[in-house]
Every structure is written in structure tokens, then in C-alpha cells.
Image (tube, rainbow, N blue to C red; front, side, top):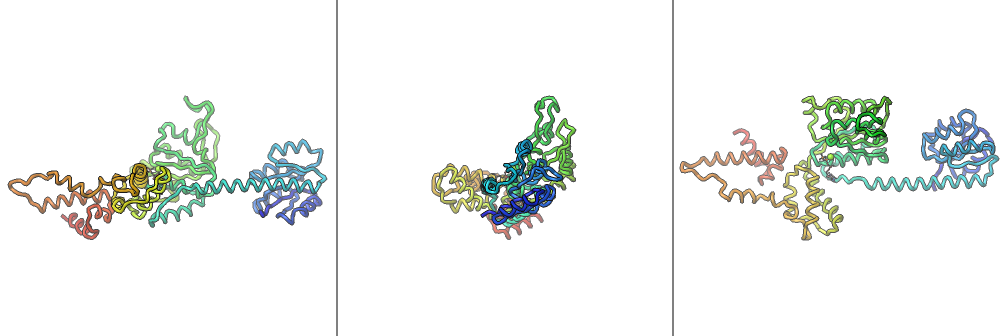
Length: 461
Ligand SMILES: Nc1ncnc2c1ncn2[C@@H]1O[C@H](COP(=O)(O)OP(=O)(O)OP(=O)(O)O)[C@@H](O)[C@H]1O
Ligand SMILES: [Mg+2]
């Protein structure tokens, strides 16, 4: 059975005690002589139901309703009143009281009224729990088994808990920055609030301020006559996700900084200050350090946005995740397209490991979607994945087509030609592998230590 807490607020001792006696066996009951006392204790018990006398010394019942509701908007309040107060009762019902009982109190009818009220509380709780469960279960799935992703997940669990802390997510395109922002929102205490995403790169410079902060009616020519709520206001009690934050110009950066420092802002064309409580998560694939160096990004804003910083490594830096993600997307699209693919062929797995994912997880996801949709066999093959193009043989085919300059009659220095070829392919491999030697060695099909040795030699030449 749920343990409900009932507050009884009445200045008449006999009434307080009489009601308390009736209910204290089944519920937690607290009695108070004044509304002020009850308000003071409110945080300790978070009552489900309040029996509130209308005529109280000090704060009157009708005013107390508002105070209680501001502390807990769904608390149920039953007014205790005398017949002659009926006008007041109507006023209280308008302010959100749930029901009323009339003095002298008839205990049996009070029991029924209380039982009905608590049933309402129970149903509300149940609906809320279901809703909460649904929201939680719709949690975005952030997949990964690499050390880097494990660390990021553990870090997210911690930082999500403090809903005021700004978080800056940095990583290449398609690495999952937006997904991380969604995950943080869902794990934070204000997950029931809105998550508003703003693509800073997509909003024209002239409109950015009014989009973010909103505008007063008639603020500028072309403004809607009704005025408009800005995205920051829409994110109140939730999360504001500023995607591509590196694309904000300096003027917008200054305005954002001012808002972040005070939590206050003005709508365009308004002189009324507004206050909003929202967590700001921002993301970028730009090198903000370099932008700061070039005076294109404000250092103070950078520190403000990045109280907590999350660096998401590219997919090539976490090979363990590639296969796991590929399998995860295979399952996802199997289900979506009603397919029954059993797995990925060994050859295709080798190629997936070798591939340089310049579009990161997004590229892998798109590749898997297309492959699952079009595959005809039971397993995904390199040709389903369109990975044949990266098979090593291709280069050799190209070479066989007489692409080399013919041997001149005076002969060539083969050692030098070989060195030039090495130089060319080593350089390309390192570039494609983003400087990751293990991966670059794989691209050239040579052992890592041989690769390192030859790379060093090439550098010395
Ligand atoms: N670890 C992951 N697990 C599951 N899905 C992922 C993961 N990382 C990324 N994705 C998926 O890959 C796609 C791209 O991710 P997302 O949009 O979050 O990237 P991004 O870093 O915001 O990219 P951009 O910089 O281009 O905006 C999305 O569909 C996302 O759901
Ligand atoms: Mg993104």
C-alpha cells in the first residue's frame, strides 16, 4: 500500500485532533495550527493531501492554496469551511482546491472525500510513473564498448545530474555529438522538460537574436504582430542544445555569454527582463582553440560553455566500436525493413575494420541502412556494403593498365622510384588514418613495426 501523507491545517485543536485520530492509523498525518507552519514544514514531507481550514489566523486558506500549489503543483487540497463561507469556497475551488467539507465535520463523509482524493493521487502517480517509464525507455541508444565510449558514458552519468552545468561536446562530424546531448538530457533531473535544438549554422545571422530570445510585437518590420517566444524561453526547465556553436558570429556570442552569465535576457524590442532556467549543451566540430587564437571565438564564452567538456573520438580511433555498431545497425534495419539477415561475412568484416570512416558513425549507419535494404543473400557481403571499391586489388589493377612511365633508353634509378612510391603511399595512408599508425600500416598491408621503421627512414631521407 502506498503511504500517503496528509496535512491538517486548522486553528481549532479539537478539529485537528479529531481528524488526525481518524486517519493516523492508515496514513502519515501532520497537524498544524497555521498555514505558515505547514508551509515551513512542507519540504520535509511533501504531502499528498492537505485538509485546509478557510478561516485561519495569519495567512488565509485562499492565499495558502497558492503557496502550497507553488511548492507542489499537484498537491490536492480539501477546504474545511463553515456554511456561511460558501462564496469563499467558490473562490478557493477556482484557485485549484480539489473539494470541500463543511463544519461540523461528519467523519464518514470526510472519509469518503479523503478516499476519493487519495484515489485521484494514486491514479495521477501511476500515470506519471508510466509516462516516466516511457520517456526513460525511449532513451536514445548510445552504443560502444571502447574504452573512450565507456569513459564518456560514465562521465555523462555524473554530469547529467547537475542540471545547471553547461556542457560542450567536441568531435568530428557524425561522431554522435547530438546523440550524446540527447542522452544527457534524458538522464538529467529535468528530463521531463523540453529539449530544444538550435542549429546555429542554419539560422541566418540577422534572425539569430530574435530566434534565440524572441521578440515583442512590432519589434521590427516584418515581425509578427503577436510577438514571438524565443528558443531559449521554449527550453525553460529543460535543455537548450546549441549545435554547431562554432558558427555563431561574435555579436551573437556576446549576447549568448550575457545570458549564460545572468540567466536573464530581453526579447528583441522589449525592456522587460526575463529569467529562464535551462541547461545549455553545445557542440561543435570546429577547432575552437584555433578560432580563439584567430579572434573568431570568444575565450570567455568558450570557458562558460565548456564548464564540462566532452571530447568524442572519431570512429577510426575506436575500432572495437565499428563492428558493434555495424551489428547494432544491422539489427535495427533488419527490423525496420522486415529483413532477416543473419550477419556480416568475414571478408566484409575485414573491410569494415580497414575502412577510413571520414563521416564516422553516420557514414557507417547510412552504409548499413543501404546494405540491409538491398542485400539479397543471408549475410552482408563486401558488395552489399559497397566496400569492394576499397579492396587492395584495385590499385594493382590500375597499375597494370600501363600507368607507369615507360623505361627510358637511358634507364632509371629504381631505388629512387621505389622511395618516391613509398613516400607517396605512406603519406596518403597517414592522412587517411588521421595519423593513426596502426591503421595506416593496415591500409598498406604491412606490419606495424615495419611501418614505423620505414616511416622513420622516409622521414630521415
Ligand atoms: N555511439 C552511437 N550509437 C548509436 N548510434 C550512434 C552513435 N553515434 C552516432 N550514432 C548515430 O549516428 C548518426 C550521427 O550522429 P550525430 O548526429 O549525433 O552526430 P554529430 O556528431 O552530431 O554529427 P554532426 O557534427 O555532423 O552534426 C545519428 O543517426 C546517431 O544516432
Ligand atoms: Mg550534430
